[in-house]
Image (cartoon, rainbow, N blue to C red; front, side):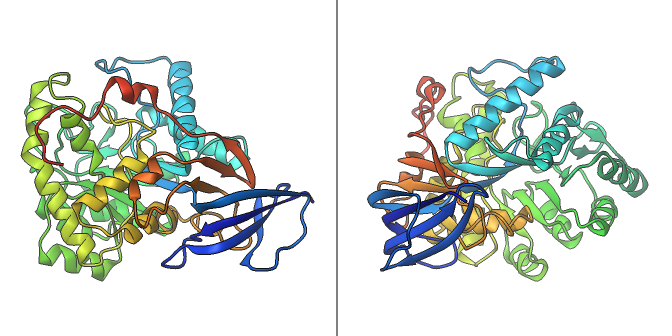
Length: 413
């Protein structure tokens, strides 16, 4: 066993409410796991690294990405060869990794390419980059949102069979595209309620038999409530909210993954670059989206952090930008830190190993220059990333984001 002792830092282990000063953490670099944490007297180790009063928190978990999509530079999507999908996926995983994300969940991938990446994760072949849980192709109604790359189903029997097929293929999650959206087609609108409650429930029952969770893309209010009544495990986006929807979140224990960044960057990076119909729809919905999430955060709904990375101009290095937007919309910094770590790990069913820096879990953490409970933007510029106990990267910088600064449009935030 080889050990590294990290010392002289403030620790947020993911379970408490504050950073604890003068902390230390002992890691086993053979297993990659935390042996012990504490304050005061320090244990002996093979190597000691002094962090000089910096701030340490668990590495983030991004619960919603589209892993094979190329984001920068912007260009209309074109079909790729299988090796090109694989190459882009690895680039995206590495971008997540070097920006502080230790695990992610792919929610809708053409041709089920992400299921192969999940198999690599399960075999231990992705130990040096971000690991992945895969949903394969998303389920959509005929001609519905995401139907070009998803699996079209109509009626509960088709949904039931489709989910069984996806589980047979090895999916670790199930994704429904149950409503319209912003970026799919000019005439499609987010208020479209495309998938019935009966259809959703049929597939959710099948997934839950195998212990697999279902994430539902829902943007209109009635769709959000229908998905919750059908026992969805997470609602992705939720552009509208009311008291009844909040009560359903609490009653079912479902997570809300707002992905505020998705319409936000269409405006702030894409106004004048992306198709005008896409920008116009974002303007129509972005404030409703922020207000909806703010209602949920203030009401104590369970929140996960996901970015929808792979959507237009929504980069894989922007997980921490989503964290900032969540605070702008009304979440506390503590809610966001928990959403980015423990909560998202719980949603992905990986809390045995990830999400907090407790003894026995992987020693994956971010070293920050400032306290993110006071300044959430510090997550965007980590000083170091530590993976399985070892420092693996210096500060991350997104060169493509420099080409697409957040300076377009006329939003007030």
